[in-house]
Structure formats: C-alpha cells, structure tokens
Length: 159
Image (cartoon, rainbow, N blue to C red; front, side):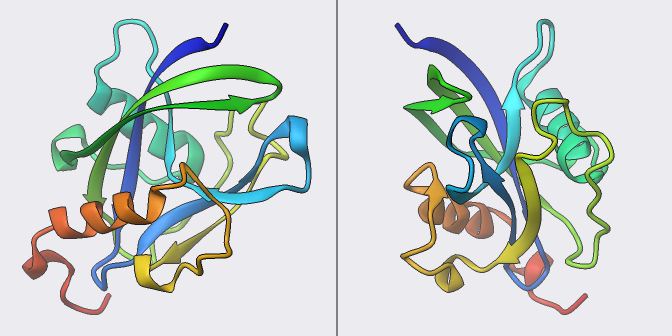
C-alpha cells in the first residue's frame, strides 16, 4: 500500500519567465535523471507556505518570506515512488519571483538528498525538450501556470 505524502512545492520564476528546476535521480534508480520542482513533505505543525519556503532554502539556499509566494498555482495528487517506497503525493504548488542570478547552493540538503539532487538550472517551459524526463509528467504545464501567476510587470525585465 502506498504512503500518503502531503507536500508543498515551489517554482521560482525569473524576471525573464524561466523556472528554476532541480536535476535529480531516485536512489533506487541511479542514473535515471529527471527534472523536478523544489519541494518536499510538510512537517507536523507546518503550513504549506512554511514548508515551501523551508524546502526552497534547504534545496537551493534561496530565502524568501512566505508572503512572497503566489498561489497555489496548481494542486496534484499522483502516485510515485522514491527510494523503493510507493507514495501517493498530494502536492500544492506555489510560484515565487526570484532573480535569475540568485545563488543556488546545496549546503542544506537532507542526508537522503545528497548525491540524488544533482544540480539546478533555469528553464522556460517552451525550452524544456519533450524527450527530457520530468516529474511529474505534467510539470511543463505546471511551469506555465507558475509563470502566468507572476504578473507580467514582475517578470518582464532583465536581471
């Protein structure tokens, strides 16, 4: 039986409409690389917004206040596995404006993320090739929703 896992996820959107994604692998399927959003499980007593900003800090080193989050921009319930464990993910997605030159670090990763979170890069939804693996499979549409949720006046310039 799959474990129910409530998560908060955040899609940092740059001023030029690109989204910061994480390059990852499942420790049970090493070498099968995919791109995913920042995020993780809600801790007891935490709100979804608190989880989203905590995960953004842990997984990228980027600090934003909860009030800067826009959304939710998407909600998704879908089955997945990680580390050989079956889950049903109940994910709430937020968007947040972040400068494209924000410094990304992996200094605060959880032990199980070390060696499985392999990098980060900015992608425009239309530039992420169809043959590139993403999780969940509808991530490109979720990215479009995040970009659309950030008012154009806030992502229209260069930074």
